[in-house]
Image 1 (tube, rainbow, N blue to C red):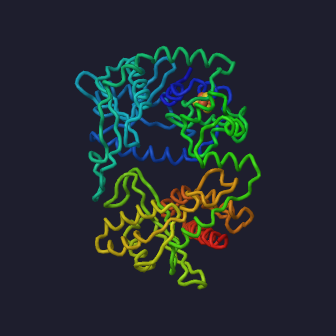
Image 2 (cartoon, helix red, strand yellow; image 1 turned 60 degrees about the horizontal axis):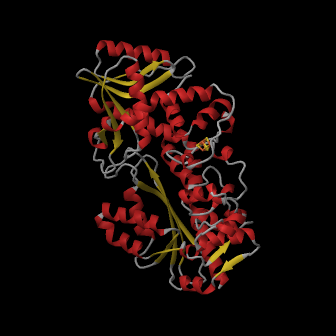
Image 3 (tube, rainbow, N blue to C red; image 1 turned 30 degrees about the horizontal axis):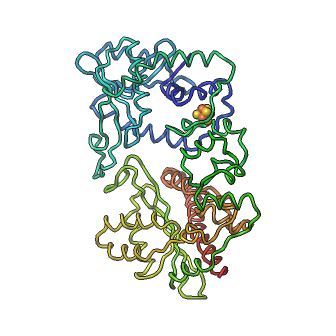
Length: 495
Ligand code: SF4
């Protein structure tokens, strides 16, 4: 058996993950956000290493660029023998169990474990992780004098260089670990048995499949279920989904007969099972359209988020708008016009985007956004940061109307929406055959998370790639507001 702390945590979530990792790893779904999360974790880890001043890092790479565990374990042993104050990535192994401690900090009588997490709160799985580390260290002959979690303080606001003491907050979790610590030997015995048995463990899906992490074997473990099924019902809580599943009410047919669902969920099933075409509530749509007026603007932001604040005045995980697209029609029958903004990658975009919004959207005009909570939130934040622009910005914000409303209120529905009101579901449901409205036909950027990943990388690209990436971002964001225009026009045509 070779167990790392992440493998132990996977086993803790569900023993079948451990078995599938060994016997059917090809069934695992690829996690497209893994690389980005690892790179964020590394950045946060590197910064946190400086928490206690000078440190020695044991990370060693082999010739083929993989972690050299043996070298790291040896280096750690050497540093412990020297009495080094802070050892980062301190590696230990015991009886096939391996772990690397983020920061091993010398205290009176031994060493304390500091586990660094990019999250802002305590999650129970972190205790499982730290308990495992404590076990491996103690078995390796280290006296563990304390166990701590280092989390991100989301109240921290950057001013100048990052202040690591303020960016991170440290929690003593020593008193919370015992229960998990006591289960380790039994868990390891069970893991060993599972790994030495070629028969797949008989473990059915449960709420463990989504907590603490969404399991990458979900598709494999649900392949026996009909499509669609109870897990496809939109906005039904996971607890209720498993309740139906455990009661054998799984297919849409069974849910139609025995389910107690709300109006929108019932309609999703009804429209899926029966050929009902499109539901249109004309008076509702008219009432919504009557709230709009010319000149009419259509606004959409793209934002990025960073655990370590990149710019002065910003907090960890703050949504930073770096781009917008703006379509507008000055009067009834007037041509559709377009303006846009895309900041320079690597520079603080906030002042420039705030000024550009004020320059391009006059006061007292009606602006449409799709799910306006997001756009309104960003504009309010800009108004707080730049008091000289706040009057204009808050005027824009106050006059934003939400194109989501007719769909959220159920004035328009068809089967292709699958119960969802997001623009990515509504658009293809209304225009199934229009290639100009198909995000898959775009180059390079197809959704908001790709946009937020690519934008910060542009600054380090060669010139030619930079201009391609910027062009792709502009095209993507433009399609977002063009899609809103098309949806609005469709609503008009319906009444
Ligand atoms: S999908 Fe659920 S049952 Fe299947 S391996 Fe993952 S956690 Fe276990």
